[in-house]
Every structure is written in C-alpha cells, then in structure tokens.
Image (cartoon, rainbow, N blue to C red):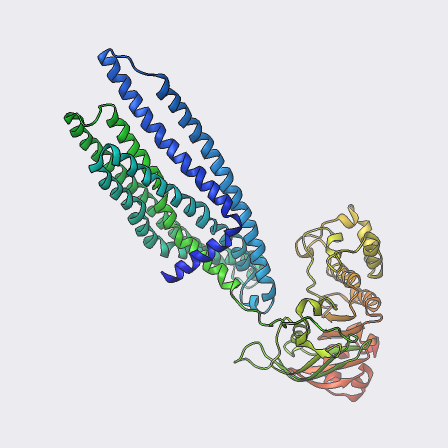
Length: 586
C-alpha cells in the first residue's frame, strides 16, 4: 500500500505542469454530469406534471421547464465536448513530455545499464508502458472529481426533499463508488500487472523472431519460437479475459446499486406522496435524479481495476529511471586537455564484481599525432578499451589520462566531443543521408557536408541516387551496402573534426576490394589526428600505423611495428589473420 501511494505521488508530480489543464477538464466533466442529472430530473418532473395537469384540466407553466431542458441539453453536449478536448489535449501533451523525460533519463544509462534490457523491451517501456500511464490521469483523476460532485449533489437535494432517504442513498453510492472500486482494485491488480509483463514478453519474442528469422530457420528452431509466441499470446489473452470479466461484473454491480437506490427512493416517495409530504410530480423527478447520479460513480470500479495495470507500467518505467549510471559524472567542469594523447597504466576493468577481468594490467601510450593499433582475438578486451575511453564503462584499478588529465575528471559529453569513432556498428537512422551525415556536426552547412563526403569517397555514389543527399538510408542503413555505410561514418567523423580517432573494427565484414578502398578513405581521416585502431585483423591498415599491440585476456603480450612483429615470429606472426596481410603490407 505504501508503495502504491509513493507511485501515485510520483505520477501526480509528473503531471504538475499540466494541473491547470486537468483542473479545467475536471470542472467541465463535473458541469457535464450536473447538467445530465438536471436534464433527467427536470424532464421527469415536467412529464409527470404535464400528465397530472392534463388529467385535472389545470394550467401548467410550459416555458420554464422547457427552457431548462434545452439549457441542460446544451450544457451537457457542449460540456462533454470541451471536457474531452481539454483532457485529451492535456494527456497528449503530458505523454509527449513523459517520453522526452524518460529518454533524457535513459541516455546517461547507455550502454552499461541498458545492456541488460533488449531493445524491444525498452521500446515497450517508452511506448506502451508510458501510454498506459495516461489511465492515472484521464481515467482516475477526472472520474474521482465527478464522483465526488455527483454524490454531493444527491446528498444536498435529498437532504431537502427526502431527508430520511438521503443517508441510505449516499451509502449505496459509497458502496458503488468506494467499496466496489476497492474490491475491483484488489481483484484487478494481479491480472493487470500480469498483462503488462505478458505484453512486454510477447513484443520481445515477436521482434526477436522477426529479426532472427534466418538463424531460426537454419537451426530448425522456427517452430519452437512460434510455439513460444503462441504461449505468450494465450497468456496475454487470458489476462485480458480476466480483466474483461471484472469490468462486466463491476458494471453490473453499479447498475444493481443504482436500481436499488432508485427503487428505495420510489418506495419511500410513494409513502410521502400518500401522506401529502411530497408532490406527485416530484417523485419521478427524484427517482430519475438518483438513477442518473450513479453515472458519476460508474467509471470508478473500472478506473481502480486498471490501477494494477497502471502501477505495473509505472514500476517498469521508474525501474529504469531510478537506475544510477555506471559511470558517475564529475561535480565540476571538465579540464582543458593538452593535446589528444592517451596514457593507460596498470588498468584493470571488469563488467561485474564476480566476473573475470576484461582488462588486466593494461599499459598503453598514445602520444598526440601517433597511430597505434590493438589487435587480438574476440574476447581479448579490445571493445572494453573503446568503452572505457568513451566513459561508457568504469575501470576499477589503474590510471587513465587524456590530454594530460585524469579521464574521470572529464564529463562524458565533453570527452566524447573530442573523440570521433568509426566502427562496423556506426548507426544510420531511417532519415536522409544528409541528416545522417550531419549527426557529426549539426551546424555543418551543405558545402561542409559535400566536402566531407568527397574526402570519404562517397559523394559520387550519393549524387548518383535519384534523390541525392535527400535519399533515405532506411532503418539501420538497410538501403546501403556495408562499405557505403562505413564511408558515411567516415564522412560523419570528418565533419566532427575531433582530435582523437577511434577505429573499432572499421573493415570487419567487407570484401578485400571494398576493404582496400575503404582504407584509402580512412587514411584521409587519420591525417593530423591521434589514432587508435582496434581490430582482430589489421589487413590493409597495417602499413598506416606506427605501433601494433597484441592483446590477450586483457594484457599486452607483444608490441612493435608490423614488420618487427612478423620478423620476431611470436604470437602475432603465428596468427593466420595477421599472416594473411603479410603479402600486402609486410
């Protein structure tokens, strides 16, 4: 219960910038409900009075009740329209703000803290889970205000007309508006939370199945994946059926309470009419008034039933938002680097306290303007060096300096602004090639972009496309080949014009011809910069570096020039990947 209250307070705090919108929407909803109740009450009294006047041959003031009926009808229609416009506008604005807020809180967690979550799960949280949070505002705050106003209206009117019926009717309304919703809240908590988890798991399974379809078919696991998706679908449907049954049960229970209250008023009203304490035309007015007033509390059971689902989504959102970044930011401003040199002494790093050391006593020296290559098999620790230098991961022991200052004294964004990265995983977004290039420098003009594309030897290809630089690259650059995507990454790095260049497996997965051509583009990019090449095979890049470090299990086991290492006949020379380039660059 305490946890639920804490979640509710946090959700209300997030909506505070739009509290005026929600207050206006709640006011319109209250006025709409009062107009609806007034319409039914006046109409009931008017019809009864007309019948009594006709039977007695008496005169009746027709114009006043007719005017009131028209007024209440207009207020109900207009109020409902304004209420929907205001509350939905507030909700959409809030959802947009929540997504921006969520993304801003996620950004410092990447990639270390987010590595435990799949992309489809993160997408589920930023889309479906945040969409679910609207229930806390649109289907809880406003209905509560309407329910309170409707109950007060019934209590006040009955206190003046049928005092003895006022308390029983208010009690029945409390059962329908408080006791029943609380029961639905308890019954709907488990299936609501289970529905959230099942929906997230189903999305992950479907996306994984689509993205890995080729591998699943190769290994004959397609049927197994389909069965898993089918099981998750049945689980989701089961929870939705349970929630639908609860919704039907709550609606029937509210209808029963409304009928009991109305018939109680009718029966007591008949006694009062027979005693002359109540006018005959007032009885149908009060009966319809009480019956319609239950519309104010009718949404409450469904609203609290959805609270379990809403809180389940909130917990998934806040679970990520509350996570602390693995790499803490320094309190003060970043120092001004003296050049773009890197020094690493006795660096040890691992990904968790119980895991093996990814880097185990690493020593590295990269003076400004020098080019160093680090080679080694998969799992040697090469990627760990990149993540460490970009401040994506924290190291536990040793000393790392950039530009003469401790690496930990730099703020992440300040450090990364001085580093350009070209890798096999350089991401291309589903937007134009021009916008993908401008990621390196959003302020770059068209001439700067063309100049960088020419240097990266990709300009001629781009202008050959039907829409040139306005051509869409497709999701993850699917419309481009590996070599073309890599050249765009090089042009992007040229636009960034950073003093330190990290080449992380830049030629991986390319055929020899494309690889050789790409190296020529990389040579242009390396000019005048400190360069750290990280790869498991140097290929044509070997002749462009000043020193080669061979990494195994997080340690440097050999170092020297490419030619010297081959002549030495050690680990580097014995590796077939390295020997394969001897005829080209040896």
